Length: 111
Length: 111
DNA sequence: TTGCAAAGCATGGAAGTTCTAGGTATACTC
DNA sequence: GAGTATACCTAGAACTTCCATGCTTTGCAA
Image (cartoon, rainbow over all chains, first blue to last red; front, top):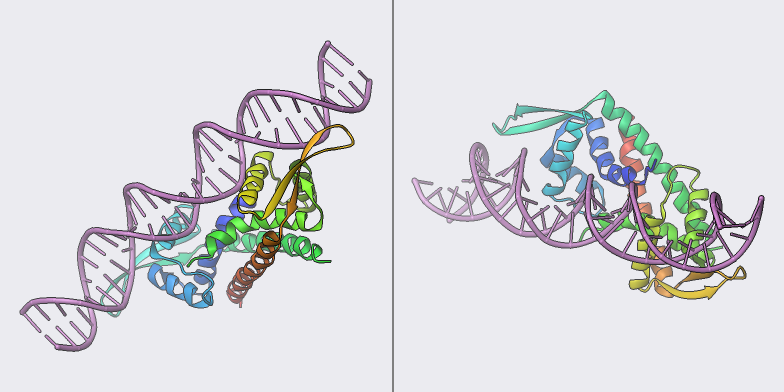
């Protein structure tokens, strides 16, 4: 069993799930929100996020629903599911272990 | 500019560099050491690590040198370079930013 | 009313990555 | 001399993310 690869993919998935755990949202806005909060360390493109949303939906971690906005525009809203919340929690924990290992090892190398 | 992808790859590179920053070592032992210290959250295979070492060498972040062990066995020792140390330091910082973002966002979703 | 920018979703293909699965060879132990 | 541990390596499969691009609709300005 090797978590590493999933952890990696999880870093992007986790960010998306984090946004959706607060409020349902749609692709275009998720991108803007994450890019804003990232403080400029990276910039997601649309082509990065939409496939991730599709995968999350396939995995039943989110549910999608077309809605009409006040502006009259059609948007595909994504809602996090119970499964998605579990994945978010588990992923955050796994991420923390990896981060712990990394700081422990990198830190030790400066002594 | 998008750091994300490099960050990802960096997580594995960083662990290897961390080991080498303490002591020069060779592939087979690096694998054992990291697997031991990971506390079981993942298990690297040889096929994962050797290509990484080759890439690090190509990038001049490590230097390789064949040496004869007491046991009479040939080993390829890897030494971290100045460039490698810089990469380790920079990578650790980038990693921390991402981790900060992640905990900030995931944390906020539980409030 | 025409034209352009922004909002909004989507996909195909390039490039990169790790993992699996194999191969080779030497030393030690029984 | 057979098996196990040490030690290195690579090809190819499978999976990702990223970039470029295309499409449609709405809003606004000239």
